[in-house]
Image (cartoon, rainbow, N blue to C red):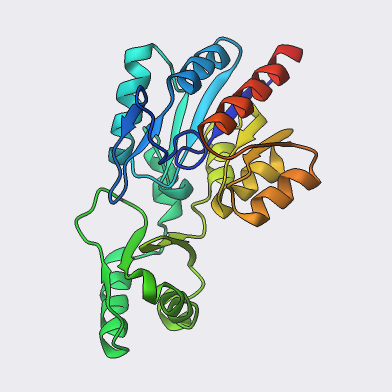
Amino acid sequence: MKKPAFVTDLDGTINHAALLPDGLLIRGRTTDSYLSRQALALLLELAKLTDIYIATGRSLAGTADFREHFAEAGLRIAGWIVEHGAVVDQHPAWQESVLARIDLSAVRSQLEEFARQHGLAMKVESGSSHQAVLRCAVKEAEQEQAVVFFNNLPAVLTGQFRIVAEPGKIVLVPKQGEKYAAFQAVFGGRHCLACAAGDRPDDLTLLQHAAFPMTLAGASPIVQQTVRQRGGFLAAAGHAGTAAMLEAALAQFRKV
């Protein structure tokens, strides 16, 4: 019998930019955020009842602050799904399958050349800590133009990538690399997705397949709509909402 698991996103779901005087600092590429001590305490309570998995858009290196805080508190994380689902820590076979027949270096070169030709002030980050996605830094004023640009590059993307647009950047993720697919492929043999929390469109498949989906009022409209339609839990935005959401997750696992 499979063990029920809890899978959660990080930024915007567990940690938030709102300042907390006693919060735990989470450094970001452009903006820092905070993990509340209440949220950490609730995660510790959840870990007594179930296995916790993290599914984030961050690279593994980018989760260092989380891993440090979790280790200091004695919180065990059963698995780390990173880079929007394209990489699973300690499971290289998943990344290899995601990148099958994809040459990231060639795609990067083509994107840079097309951006130059179209006068788009976009920088494709190279040498970053990300292993299976392409991160493109764009000016906020050019974000919409950049998304249109990407959507009209079938010769470059050839249906191999999906676009994740975030403030100040656009991420190209190999289509095989997806959070729920990664969870199922690597951990689904022994765990079922009992509860999932997320706030962005790249969390949607987790929320669509979880027995009990959860999100916050500050989440993307499509995420909120999905959670409402599935009878999940919609909390207030911010740190208080995260605490309420984790309390709701605890209530679910205490029923099991």
